[in-house]
Image (cartoon, rainbow, N blue to C red; front, side, top):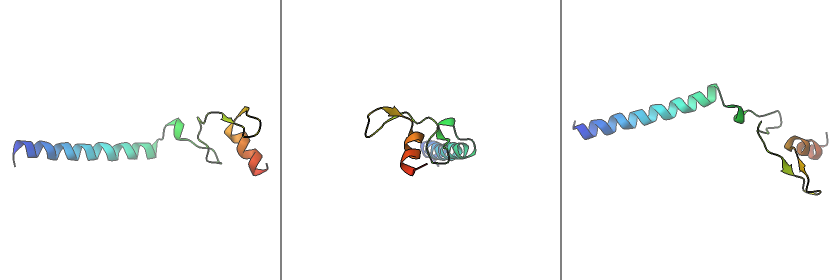
Length: 69
């Protein structure tokens, strides 16, 4: 095996290990931005524009309104 082929082999395996380790890490301890509430809304969701009044409201308030809570 030549040096360049060995280097590419090590590089490829290293990239795979880093990718798999990153995915496993995100599944074990996700960052706060990936946490969601019971309605599936992300923790750091910005305010949204109310479709009728145009004012800024939280996504949770809009969900409660359209769900009828």
